Image (cartoon, rainbow, N blue to C red; front, side, top):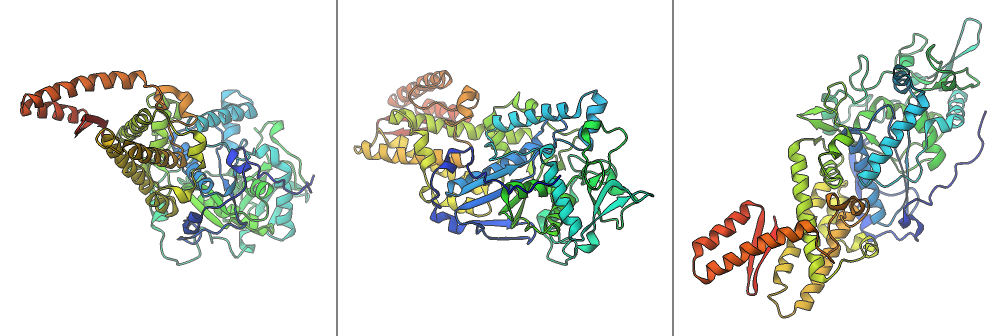
Length: 549
């Protein structure tokens, strides 16, 4: 029943950058990250020099993904990308919960096999991740593939005196196994339930919000495992490590163990899989803010009670709100990813989802998408104009090869400040404004070659910063997405840009004629009309140029 095989080395990532020699940028010395357990932002130091191990709680694949789910995936994708840009070798594990009460119950109601339903929605999540440019994990383990690991872990907890097996009247194990919270004096350290520490405002806001996306029963913040309400528990705080099957559970949803037939509790899979793939202790455990308690609190306790170190740092992404209320299926405000993508490009949706720091609540609205579309227009307009001026774009290899040490300092400072995406985005648009100014000077300056070099340097910086956020329009998946998701590479103009260029050029020519005739009122009227349409006109000695605001 046990599995004595040592955890394998999964550090050869699916990402090409993980196959290259590790060279950590000097900028990494300034990285500071928040830790939920300490409630403080502190300097990040990896357990192993040059390497970072990250485990993020993935989806319970019971139904289609919605924006609330994917926000966490995008948030931790940005965290991961920053580590990669800093030069770290990153092992990124994201699990799939493919068996639990919700999956079993919904499959039964729909007349489906539970594993078929789980796999169907797992594929939907994967498609959503890929469409929105979320890097594939180094490894993506399923709960059902790690039963022996969970059983071994539970046995260790029992052997260490921190769990108990429920038996029937004849002394035979029932399949119910509980963690003995009273035996573990450290319980509550993650969420500070036993401490009088200074209140974490982000956590306090979360506690005032709710309900959880997966809320059921009376607990509006967390799913209720029926096994956790059992009268067989010694203490109300005790939670299920393993549980006996319900009468309605299919035969293929039951596993035999030394403590009876059943299936895993909600929390045990993440402890087992994080240890399987990341070993004894790892750098970061991530997940949504509503997983802090009970899931992550229980996970931390059972991992340490089994004799293994827990994560060094816990990071939690805040949720998506709609009109100040957390997105929830029960509230009817959940927005499926396919429905959002049907009306907006994937680039725009990703930008909106990643537009604020991961710890900040993200208000989802039409206005947020409008602002994301405007950002895309500004980004793609500059990249395209710069590419045309230079006669081509820097290669993807050049873009990805830019070290964090070579990026603009304000961008690096923002990303090192607990991955402050808002500050990083501001740095990108500051650089774009400088680039647009340089483009307007190209025809005016005798040293045009020097200006072209500056334009190229600026373009490379912009694309490298965007790429760090997963938003370089000339990278996958945006290139394959076509006009809705990518910008021109600059060697040829898109039909849309060509049409816009023709219309605006006609207006600029009319304005030039008006100025020549000293009809400044007409010239100003043309300029103001273009400005109202979101087009900025810049006058130079060699004529006028335009750009989108």
